[in-house]
Length: 380
Length: 96
Image (cartoon, rainbow over all chains, first blue to last red; front, side, top):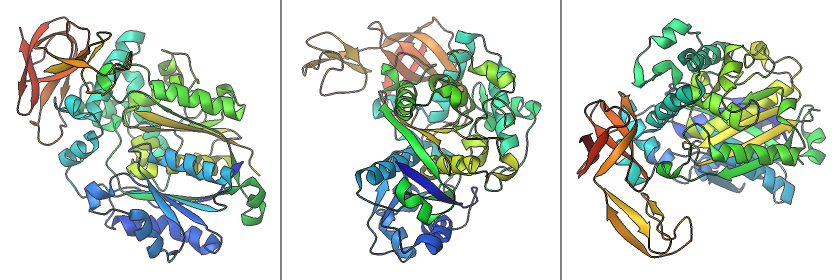
């Protein structure tokens, strides 16, 4: 079994540093502590070519850290890169290929105007579908309209995700947005893709997060605190949006979650804290249903009842989520794992979920092209 | 707009494939479509380069039941029939 035994964050937001310095910023505190033991580096990053004109970022980062001789690889799976990096590290440790893996998630995205950025990210869609002027936010708008209509959910329930996650982000010193927003502010903010408004989308962010992973056998000699990866699940759905059967459910999320829960022997009802991929607010509701936490069409009620707040029965995105913490694409999935590590080991500060023992993260690529779910527990 | 229809089972789809997603057949015919019925329509204000700064995105179903996206400068109600035309900057549609 693999474990996460340390985590280190950079502040997310608009940063002046380049991608390599940002990567090193979160990695350095871990390298200082464990540098002599690190035998593999995984860099989760999707767009260093498009945004930063850099390829082979893994070797550039390992040299910046003076870990030149340590083998490394870059994992690119768009927004789901971080989840894939965790899955890869977990698999390598389980297989005995590596002992102590430094996983770095990093992205530098704010150097281009938003329209250019929207275009770069939309490149994950098929050209035949993208040709109409499709973007990820527009798909979220179609999903929102379909969800509200199909399940009779009030418009406010989606906006409340942004209110909740901005509140949580205000408690997270590493979050891009560190201020609360009211329901009125969300509902009256600028429309991005009707009916969704600007506060209901994640910002374009720079940032990096690093974690250390090892085997359970090695963990006690490395650090006092660790969290076990109890189970993982990876699944793909069709990347052709026009071929999907439903606009209100994401097949890859359902199957990845089912797998992770089955492999971990944990039921969704056991989970104390979850980090979901809320690139757009509606996704948090849809994923909370597809992951098995709420019945289909009832996730919005949990939001309205406060069940997903930090003090609720199932806190979701206590970190602020992508919505408020920010979404430096390659960093996001690693940040989810780092947040769960903090929550289960009691290190989450003002956003600490009481008695968090079992955690769950859902890292999603594209608009559900694929997903990686991870169940965590067994803190030392 | 061009769709692909499997020569073996008749499955029709938008995004090109070298194997039919239903029967794995490898022979396809191209089907030209220029009409659909609107399933939904949204306005998008934050748009990607190189598209206009504001437009409506229409999700329409063709006669073969294939969902396709096209752009419109006007909102079009659900259930309306639209004419789809391929332009240099992708497919656009207007109410029939």
